[in-house]
Length: 255
Length: 246
Image: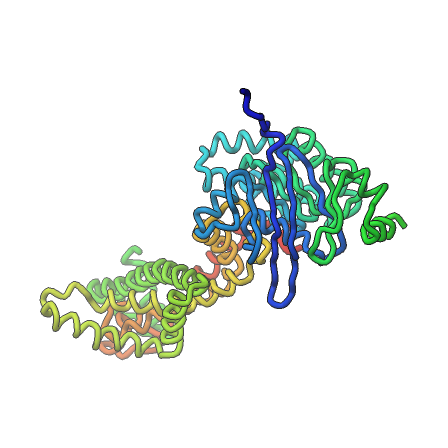
């Protein structure tokens, strides 16, 4: 008898079950369930303070939930205790921040190669060759020797994406990566992410760019007050939301 | 310097009432120049060691581990809140004697010179540590999170991100401390380390030319501290992070 076969594409890469997080008396996440399949792009939308970024922080172990399970691939993130275990996890997960957070004392090239060289032990020559390829991919080949402070926000954010990709992550988390950008540079960052999604990278995005989320995501998750209010395909969430809160949020943005 | 030029200088100085006769004596001249060299050696050695001590202490202070941070804090407070001269006396008259008692005076590997280097390294190391601590604390939390998210360990974060940034932020204060250190080497004279001040003192006792020696001392220390601050400026320029904070 052939075994029922579950292809890697169908198996979830990220799974959150009943995740609770509190900061003091502030209950930020109240039982989050979330599944991201390999190769999918999932967007988390919702009002500020609804716990969106906190979800991302639980996934790469920056935060440990007090209750619930977080599983990435074969790793139970909520059970990790040592720094070494968390490092092993973080090497597999790219994280791109709203404020780019490039290292200001290093050139663009060194920002990208420092982690592969120091953490993965890649030879400098190989790391640099790959960094140049990544910079070409994010269309910044002419900025190899520039310092972060000399770049625009959009350029810095593209370097930050290249820096995350240099670690060959299985998954990239994007935390409101266009929120700090000038409107004219948002497009260049989004097109890099779009390309990444098309290449099959698993992406989990916290975003306020509704049109973009609708265009690239397989799944949209709407959070409010630390709970997932509604989830579904972009079509369902943006054009036929069932929950009145989702409806109100989407409508408010439209107007 | 050719002997004739020296004789001419001594003559010229004498005509305006300054007695630099010691420069004509080879032995006195050599021992004074030796003092200049010792001051430079003492400064360079103490600068390097104090920077190492400061970096280590700053790392302990910001480690977030009380069992490391508390002793480091106590170390810094003791060294900052007692006079440098007293620390030198304490090292030489207490620590040195204790070593003498335990291994015997003839087997004691320490010298007054070595004690001065140790005292300066930890004394100024404590000041550097505070400057570097402020620098480490000025590294934005978000920058730390991004390094950690890339997979940096606590140690790698310190070595590749926090310290390089802290060093840049703290550089003006560090240079200030180092200029102080160069001047403080004159305290070595208190326990007969043959540095510039001590060597000059030996000469003015013999020749009663305090003013003349003071002028020389002023020139040498001035040149040394000026070099330290010039080097500091050059380093600041070299380590500049283009576009940062603008």
